[in-house]
Amino acid sequence: MTQEQALEILKTGANVFLTGEPGSGKTYTVNQYADYLREHNIQPAITASTGIAATHLNGITIHSWAGIGIKEHLSRGDLEKIAKTAYVVKRVAKAKVLIIDEISMLEAGTFGLVDLVCQQIFQSKQPFGGLQVVVVGDFFQLPPIGKVGQAQFAFKSPSWQKANFAVCYLTEQYRQDDEAFLTMLSAIRSNGFTEKHLANIQSRVIEPDKSPKDITRIFSHNMDVDRINSQELGQLSGKAEFFQMFSRGQSNFVDSLKKGCLSPETLELKKDACVMFTKNNLKEGFVNGTIGKVIGFSEESNYPVVKITSGEEIEVSPMEWTIEEHGDIKARITQVPLRLAWAITIHKSQGMSLDMAVMDLQKVFEFGQGYVALSRVRRLSGLYLLGYNQKAFLTHPEMQNQDRIFREQSQQIQDDFILMLKDEIISQQNNFLIACGGALSKQALSKKSPAVKKEKTSTYDKTMALINEGKNIEEITKARGVTQGTIIGHLENLVLKDKINQEGLEQLVEEGLLAKIPEIGQVFRELDTDKLSVVFEKFAGEYSYDQLRLARLFLSFN
Image (cartoon, rainbow, N blue to C red; front, side):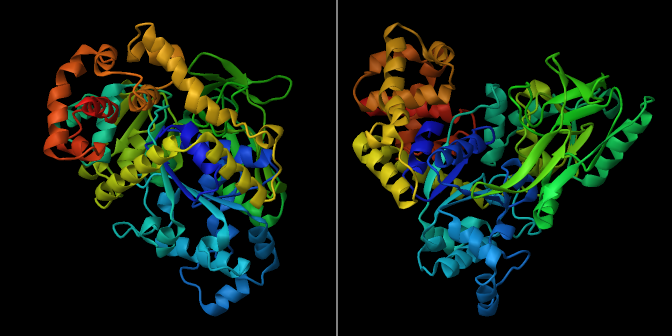
């Protein structure tokens, strides 16, 4: 499913599970939805399962939002006490939309407690008291904290089933552009990691003394990270400069911000220090995860000047992290958005995109840890590996069948949505805005939806025009400035509407894959399925999901 399709489904008010592989744009999509709600005077409740994830979103942990803290169970008395706590009631009662990020790290029991609190405060037996609930994340990544080997994922909760989530499985890829590396990551995801994939990994193993300088190292344990950062900084001979964090607001919210912020309260830097940006600022040319080296300090402001890998030099001024609640800023902290970056933990790297990284996966102890670490880098050539253990290439075994279910549910939602009339979609979206007390825009009042129009008509027409010019998939992808997965999605729609025949499709596919189409098609037939995940596992990751999607299209003509 594309980001645009997921966004239009979110706007209808349906409860949504937004998922996809690392780099598919989950956070970007949910931020787009939050911005849309705010534009219509609806303030979403932004939460996450961890402090770090919440800080990235200017939100708070779901535990704090619901007033449950560290409790694993709520008695009737506990529930009544929470429902009488003024600040919790005010916070929850104002909400119309609840967003929970990094859902993979939230236990099923805690998820159920949030449901109970919402029902109690809204005095409603509807799931989550009638709120629209949007959960975001990827269950192949880090499991619930403290439940190693016994993960009770949120989707196992009865509250998950009652919420009847529309699964939006994003299939576009914005981080990696290395097909061989993507295939390897997909193989880890499906527990189909083979000797062939291991050979690729082993080609990136290096000796510790040959590790590239000033490239972030990723470890599984904090003690390794702290030791290396302290050791490397101490070896620099320059004068140390200190930058202190400033804070304002309610003390509990300030504490939450500090705990989740990747920049320390006291940031110590020296010339030549390896640093990482901890916040996004596209205007200034950096994002969370951008790596650079301190080349000096401004004579006027004394702020650090950082040269990033592209060669650009940036004077780094302090930025703010805030917690917002219904449009009001409850707390803010201000700090230079940097941290020492000779080393970082896998946990704190989640959500980052790195051009290069040195990784030590020898002490990996959780399912998904290795997968999270490896998927931080954009391509295989940017990976330098100090070592690994057997668990580094394993994801949670329970997720194989569940992922198949999620993909199938998403495909069904996508198929149903494509067949809906635009007026019906617009009507659902407008009705939801009205139900939330939001303001309809002039475009909404005139029943025009630019986003739907773009996705349903103009974007397909533009792709079809390039097809008529004789361009192949790779050329169309470059011309449109989108991913190959997006263009394949367009082809699926165009074939469904009989705008492309078999001969026309053959002209679009590169010869190497075209020769394999009969073999792949035969497997679809033998397994009597049109499900990509089943065929992907049969081929043990030999073909990517995009390649299988193309092969499946040819079955439409038989």
